[in-house]
Amino acid sequence: MANKKIILTGDRPTGPLHIGHYIGSLANRVKLQDMYKQYVLIADMQALTDNYDNPQKVRDNILQVALDYLAVGIDPQKSTIFIQSMIPQIAELAIIYLNLVTVSRLKRNPTVKTEIKQRGFGENVPAGFLIYPVHQAADITVVKGTLVPVGDDQLPLIEQANEIVRTFNRIYNCSVLKEAEAMISPVSRLTGIDGKAKMSKSLGNALFLSDPADVVVKKVMSMYTDPDHLRASDPGKIEGNVVFTYLDAFDADKDQVQEMKEHYQRGGLGDVVVKKRLIEVLNNLLEPMRNRRADYAKDPAAVMKILFEGTDRTREVAEQTMKEVRAAMCLDYR
Ligand code: TRP
Image (cartoon, rainbow, N blue to C red; front, side, top):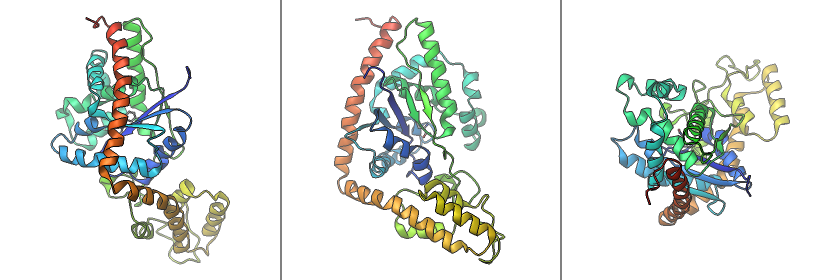
């Protein structure tokens, strides 16, 4: 028990989760919950750092993301799902960490840098947004998380969290905080259905876990393949061909995928045949998720209760960590 890993991971509730999230981190979380103690946070405070003018959107997506978690098989009996804003200890810890981080270090964080550019913030980046990596360090360390299954875009954030951990333990001469290790899945940046960029809701190229079967058919049928593969008899390219990218990621029958690739490259295999296989694979994956989602969606109050129970459990652990943190920093006044 003493060396058992503690997982802390989560997502911003800004929209429905997609199959890129699934292959990049949700699938890992479903596996890991049987081995370790797992906390899954719904990062509403982090979502507000660039949605402060639209709190209702964040509020509405709490339930949607919770349904996505339950649908993929994150089991509330095994995992503790909680709401970030309901753990004030995280905010307290973040304020403490802010003394240990420089503004220039934050501006150099590659993930934050990219996001500031994407959002067009420039020099007018909200301070809350700039410091969200510090907040995220608090998410991880408040439960003493040591393993973080996420997409590889999150690596710079975990690195920065570990810097804070080392600085804290050194300056306050203690070993209260623990460093965390990232767990990255081999497919951590799934391309969107347009074949252009990483799958994301904002780019309109996502296939959502909550998409009904007929939407999956429509999206796969519209998928980018090889624009020069005009007739089935022509040799086709598999590089950059999204249908094959997805078969590689989701089809368990690797031999058949290999065969299809060779056939496609030789010529004689039409796009529609390959797409039909992908539709079958994706709908087989998503069908049990749709069923679980529909079950839970019947009773939103029960889903919220799962979140509140997880939050209460997390708060106890968080307060214990804070007692140790306050003691290490001479803040234990009584
Ligand atoms: N930053 C993550 C995202 O963009 C969400 C997140 C918040 C997170 N806190 C975390 C992930 C802690 C892992 C650990 O989706």
